[in-house]
Image 1 (tube, rainbow, N blue to C red):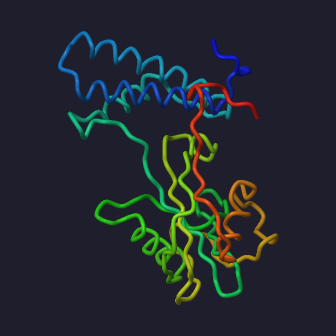
Image 2 (cartoon, one colour):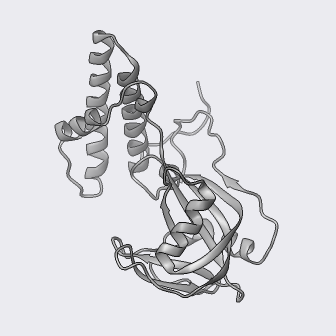
Image 3 (cartoon, helix red, strand yellow):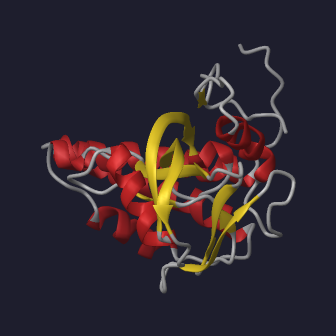
Length: 234
C-alpha cells in the first residue's frame, strides 16, 4: 500500500489515464496476431474512450464514444509503426540584444507563447527550431542549448500525449513578420512585461529570461513519480 495522499481524480488525471490506456491498447493491436487478444484490446479501447469522453465533458466538450474508438482503431499500424508514442513539439526561447523574449500569438487560440511547432521528419530537433522561428516570426536565430524536456499532459497544456523540447536561442538577424496563417501577432517582450493572455508564464518565464541573461540553469525535466499513476496534489 502506498502511503502517499490520494484525492479524487482531476480532469487532467482522467485524460492522462484514458490516453495511456488507449496507447497501450493500440500498441497491442499493432503487434498481436491473436484474435482473443485483439478482442481484449478493443475492450480496453472502449473503456479508455468512456473515460476520455467524461473527462472532456468536464470542459463542456462533447464527443461520441463509438466515434472516438473508431478513430483510435483507424490509427493502428502493424509492428513497429504501430507502437504508439507521444507526439513531439519543439519550442524556442529566443532572446535579442536587449534581453527581450520573442513571442507569438497563436492564430487558432489567441494565446501568447514562445515559438513552437511539431517535430518534422528529416530534421534534427535543432534544425526544426531554426526553421520554425524563421517561418513563424521572420527572425533568424542560432541554437545554443536545450533547456527543457517536458510532458505536455503532465504540465496541463495539452489534451493529447506529447513531449515538448525547448531550446535557448540567440537572434542573429531578420525582421519581425508574423506567419499569415499560424500567428496573429509577434513581438519581443521584456521580463515582467509579457502580453496579456500568455500561456502559463509562471511555469517557464523565469527560466527563459535566466537563460537569455546567460545564467547557468539546469535542463528542466519532469521528475519520476512514485508510483507514476498517483493522483498529484495541486
